[in-house]
Length: 276
Ligand SMILES: CC(C)(COP(=O)(O)OP(=O)(O)OC[C@H]1O[C@@H](n2cnc3c(N)ncnc32)[C@H](O)[C@@H]1OP(=O)(O)O)[C@@H](O)C(=O)NCCC(=O)NCCS
Image 1: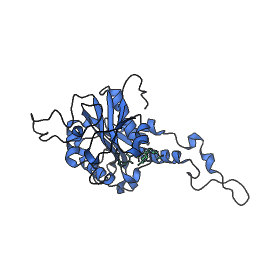
Image 2 (image 1 turned 90 degrees about the vertical axis):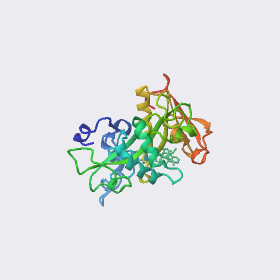
Image 3 (image 1 turned 30 degrees about the vertical axis):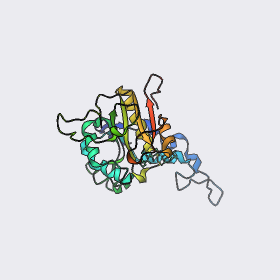
Image 4 (image 1 turned 30 degrees about the horizontal axis):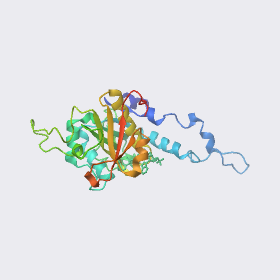
């Protein structure tokens, strides 16, 4: 991360070096792994590809580090980026519609996180579906945009597991005095649900999903603002969420978005390690 980058992070931004392991590969003593090829006289010469021979997990960590990703709470100014991300990551019948994103970012913006990279005009991230909606976040680098790569959209609910009602958009939610106290976000409730998690398809399987979920869990746990977290997932993602600290609580009764969900839960108590 360039020195001026960290000092210019906007308020609320969490740099991710603690999750990502920011030590350069050289500092880890891994350059040697690449020095296997020999020249005509049999003398070792360095590989032209500095990543050749590295374990996949380190390559992924290196790729993530090169993005200098950072996490911050989302605001209404991010709605267009979130809509584009949902469109890129989900089929039409599973994605979160714009009005629900607006609702959540109006009612409880502190429960939605975005993972961004700062992209210059030649950066590959400028080709991403979310790039056009990105904005310059650093006044000293106006040519660079914050491009949304992943988001986790949350809300509070009155149940230990995600319910159909908690996923619904209350009618008249934006009319003062007409709020529904049973569906959608319940502001005084102690369970926080991640209702939508998405990573741009071309940035998937690089560890970014895990980074944003762990970051979300840590924020909730450290703030003391929740007793537990909950979410729904398909069978194939149970191990992913387990690796983020959630436990499989069995088949969900929720039927929205096609049903067949699993309840994933994470209780915050004194025995929950803060490093999940
Ligand atoms: C699911 C999703 C959020 C995961 O994010 P990601 O950045 O791709 O995941 P990570 O790289 O952090 O994955 C870490 C590990 O979780 C597991 N995992 C991640 N995605 C998986 C998938 N689709 N199927 C099976 N296992 C998966 C793997 O073990 C992976 O490690 P590996 O890549 O070394 O095998 C992302 O793929 C996505 O946005 N998918 C489309 C939308 C979606 O399904 N959202 C979740 C709704 S509950």
